Length: 246
View 1 (cartoon, rainbow, N blue to C red):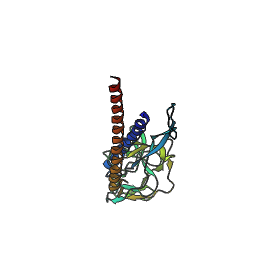
View 2 (spheres, rainbow, N blue to C red):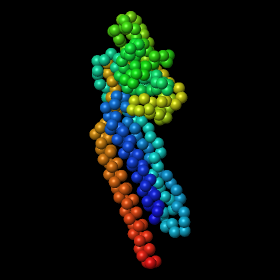
View 3 (spheres, helix red, strand yellow):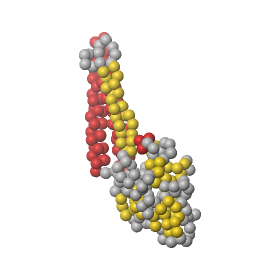
View 4 (cartoon, rainbow, N blue to C red):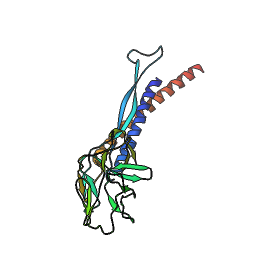
């Protein structure tokens, strides 16, 4: 039946998507602040039509790639001794200013640019609680950052780093491996827990992701063989019918 091939192809498409996502996770296993992507599959039910539908086969079940989301499990924290490297031990994201607007990130490797702004590895400025770029003076050399994000130097208080959370974490749109666009206005985290001189690593466990990829690859190969076998069966039936008519 043609339905067998259609159902198998829906599963094959979903498995291809799963392989692509897992490969992306593995590729970002060493990307600071990266959040592993996960997929949500569901069954799509459709009623079979036609006078020759056998009993018990009235409902066809297709595989549907329903959605994807980011695993918000914190990654391990690595000490760097760089005073501008920051890790968030709890909930929340840093905010950086990009050419297309503010974005959220957990990647906490920051440095000073030529004008004294605190920027990330992409050159995007770190924002304070007022939404302004944080800038240090040339005379500010002894940098101290407390757990709540307050930056101070030997010359006094400079600013407080904004730590926010999206109104709906499941509706964040990833932009690359480290930045997210949050729908709506992000909400401030009341009690952030910031660690100076450290970076949060990716939350991807490479061994687990490789195991997941091997399982998905086996399922992909099994489904591919099933589609090929059914295609061969249909072709053989067509060949026999054609020979009888001749």
